[in-house]
Length: 383
Ligand SMILES: Cc1cc2nc3c(=O)[nH]c(=O)nc-3n(C[C@H](O)[C@H](O)[C@H](O)COP(=O)(O)OP(=O)(O)OC[C@H]3O[C@@H](n4cnc5c(N)ncnc54)[C@H](O)[C@@H]3O)c2cc1C
Image 1 (cartoon, rainbow, N blue to C red):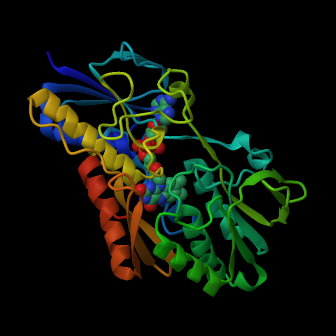
Image 2: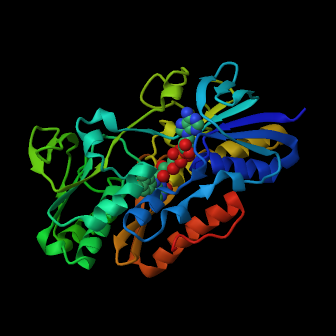
Image 3: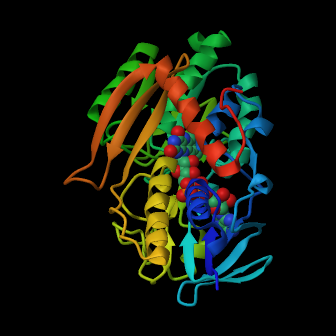
């Protein structure tokens, strides 16, 4: 009998896990990969499309291209998960698993911030970011706010990157002198675990006249008066609002009993949930790393190695360390990098490399290598 593995979510975590298991175990497994979308889009591609650096069709990676031994992809919506029986009900039928991996990411909740649905300008969903391309192309200048609406959000550098890329965009369109840019963020620094990275971002903001509003959230918008209300009641007028909406545990996961708090609790070393044989990988878990693709990918590797060891009788893998490298767009095609480690020591650490064209090339290679591995085809994030 083949081991039945069900992977819920074909994002960073689900794709990496599926690829490793297929490469190592191939025909010994029956792996079902499920996603409600028909294609994968990198988080950073959202910024590329929004700022006109890439066409939207070029950054969608169709799941139908996944051809891997032992893997069947189903495009369907997960309706319910029973972690005790490892039974998953979807629009396309019921799937029973011997090993179940939940990699459903974080849901984006526009309705949690009054006025955000009406304003409609956010860059965290695929349709939201892609629609901003036209909004930015026709923006006539004024005050642009990049506003974070919830304390936990994916890719903590993304709001800062967006501010720096917006600066370039406005310079190129001759609108920078009639515009202001502000970033509202719930941290004291842009990247709290890395003081060097934070200092570099703050220096880049100062050079470009970008206002950094620290330790605040955007609590509500008034789209008629074009006012952003912060969590202390203060008001900021805007001509353009680029929002980072509230993130939540996906509803189907909340209803499954896998979590008793905001995210799914896991064993920090193995990523196993409190239900044996059920793992939570990536943004959906509460392991203590920021929510980013590189951490989802690292967690997927540990889970995959653990499954391979279990099925082959080998040694258990090294524990998860919560380490990963994040690339940071500084504008002018220069990219910085911070290597962070959240769980390997007594406190999180971050090592910073200043922005360069060489790191820009490294980031392109990061994207190309994932598409090659996951989808088996050539691709360049450069367009
Ligand atoms: C603007 C932006 C820039 C970013 N830049 C970076 C970066 O440079 N580097 C980096 O590492 N990270 C970056 N990120 C973060 C990164 O995209 C996420 O953290 C990462 O994708 C998380 O991986 P995951 O596998 O946990 O979840 P996801 O990749 O979100 O995948 C979850 C999948 O589950 C599917 N799903 C959800 N619910 C259901 C359901 N009920 N039924 C079926 N399928 C379902 C979704 O369709 C999705 O495909 C960025 C994010 C944004 C928004």
